[in-house]
Length: 338
Image (cartoon, rainbow, N blue to C red; front, top):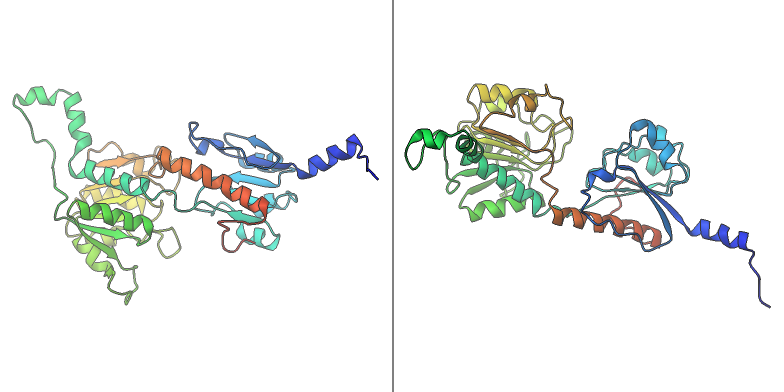
């Protein structure tokens, strides 16, 4: 015997199947990047930015939250009983209270392996520009210095080759390895720094002190942890015999930012290339902003990860994580959460 389903019942069933997804900070992915619709029945609400006091209101009734840097605290999560998945559109998940999520069966997924080309390439863009003084020479051309020199070239700024230089890499993960691969192509001597204060890590590593004292360029690719926070400051700067470039495309806070200005003033380092800051965006009186207009300094706004290719990979993986979770085959779940 056929069963008749009333229209109201059908709507109720559709509502139960429909997943509400809310993206709280869509502006953290470039507008030209395609964020494909998930393959299941859903309602997707996008907000370009979300203030802390808007989080709960905007996530009410959502089963899936997409965030990049918006903080989801235990207090906010306690008011969101429908939430089942927090899909982080980045690798770092410090913005989420993972303990609360674990205790309340809220899954967290993140993005992995999407920046394997873009971060090493950005790192070397900074290294090349600084070693060859590209930015100040360009400014000189704009300022008419070429005409004032009255000859085919002029030598207002230092120019140094990469071949034969010693590159100290702090962080031996896939990004550090990618930087080393490019460096070898330039004929650089690469050194992976042993973890500060740790010995006996094996032949891959060069002792921390040796890297600090002998590198011509030091580039950071470490996570920010209690052990790595502030691992380079004035004590390290004073031991840098080669006056190296310091490049950070990893995390703000790995270098004591208040000490960088002093290190430059005392000629302990030859230049700075930073893509990250401990506070983002940094206020105009921040130490990095105070040195940003120097000819041997380049500050970029946390965009080493952000090639179009990398962002599209991120967006595709983000939707994959959501679809896989709804399918019951979750991917990229963050340890400590579900």
